[in-house]
Amino acid sequence: MTDTGDLADIEQSLLGGPRRYTRSQVAELSGVPTERARKLWVALGFPAAADDDDVAFTDADVAAIRAFSGLAPDATADEHNQIAAARTVGQAMARLAEWHADLIIREITPAEGDSTVSDSHRRTEAITRIVGVLTGLQDYTWQRHLAAALNRSVESAGPTRPLLVGFADMVGYTRLSRHLDPDELTELLDAFETATTDAIVDGGGWVIKNVGDEVMFAAADPAAGARIGLALQDEIAVAAQTISEMPQIRVGLAYGPVLTRFGDLYGTVVNVAARLTGVARPGTVLIDDQAAAALEDQNEFSLRHLRNVRVKGFSRLRSHVLRRRRRQ
Image (cartoon, rainbow, N blue to C red; front, side, top):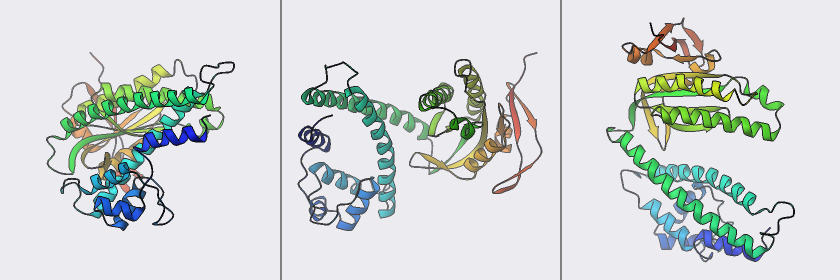
């Protein structure tokens, strides 16, 4: 691996310069009170300096604290919202950075008998090159996603808007993962994420998050969300033809007003979709009453009404099995 000197050069490049400020100096230069600056720093996912005299911060750190403090008033009505925004950005970037670090390590680790990246200088050059590529790709991808998100949100007048929310999870994943080796588990998760992302994006929806064996997604149009739910089953069936361990999935959909907050969704609709997923049979799609009402005039779908079920938080949850209507 790279030596200490090379790592210091790489760190300085990534941090935007040398560490030259204490916590109190950051507060003074950014115009943000020391305690608030500390809270923002920790919310971004970085450990606080051991004490106020530690020289641990760079010019880029000062600029970041100043930037969060200077966001538009509507976005940062109080300190709580500033901290929440910082925490959301920090968590997203931390996950991305972990993947980037794994990618870089794989790229600079020479294969047995390969001497092309054997010396420290070449490895440092390789890291610098890869970071440049990833930075450009990250900026490009973020801007494209931001454009799409703005288009989806332009008609929303507040923090809530009607959406179809869905979950899809792999049946029996916990049991299955116990006997898969790391390579097999990686292959399974890659296939699941590829299949579900393709179905969701091609159907006009967007992925909210992946959590292990489950994906959460949303669509502005109930019919589009219903098509996604059915397409998810199709994509997984195709994946199962090449991934022998690929289990069936179950899908739950619910429609109605949801709270959008820092890229995530909250509210009763989200909870209903999650509960329906938990009670759905393998290979099926369940929807709630509101989604069923929104789809009742859509001739492409067939609905079979089920009896009420008792689930956590809901004593009488009514569900409907969603299928494609057979052509006559």
